[in-house]
Length: 292
Image (cartoon, rainbow, N blue to C red; front, side):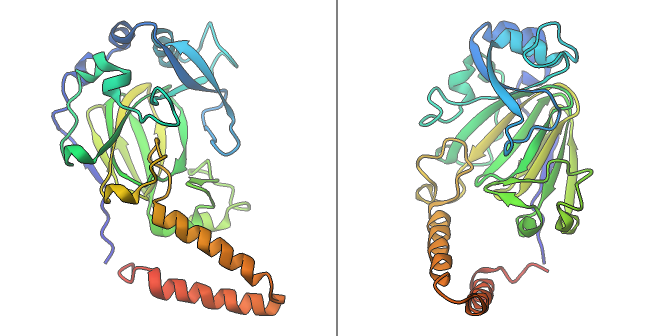
């Protein structure tokens, strides 16, 4: 049996943010502090090809621009899209925490308490232009996507469909999940799609390792809360984003890479034969057997 653990929670008590967070209030609350943002000339942002630029704007100016469709002032084009993903003071060492980066707004939010306080990892404040689409990726921690204002569409894929998603690291090369290039990505049709629409005030539980692709159907503000559901020592201490593979997984992949390098010492037919045996062994020893 496959247990689908996706869950949209509605009607939760999220604090005054759901009514207070208008563009004017947001601009006044945090003022002209500088924020680093993504700016894209096209709606589909691609982390692999980096089809966007990073720019800095005062927070109040950024909010006003992100809420517009056409811009009088712009970096690339008059209909460019904006995206803020809050980060810590030092991206290499500090995690995103709305209480530290946006303390005034943090007072308006009540984060659902579905985990122990010591399991908390980060709270990522996000603001997106209407129409912006984020690349498909997975995170290594369970998380809540709290849609405070605006509407988002989220498409998800199970971890077991990883073979069909054309991965590069934690990200999928398939940008357009609605109209994929079938010549380039023929296996993508095998990935089973789960879809939900989040209205203002909805909360989506995204389990660790589940791939997700997010479109902001309207200008919107969201908060992503990540927590450590594995023992703390399982995670990479240098991870500030919640997307570095657990330590044991990283070590296993390094060992596998060394094993593949060793196979190169054999002639091609032997290499093929022993590689297939290795694949079978991995399937026998490590695959779950409760997937249908």
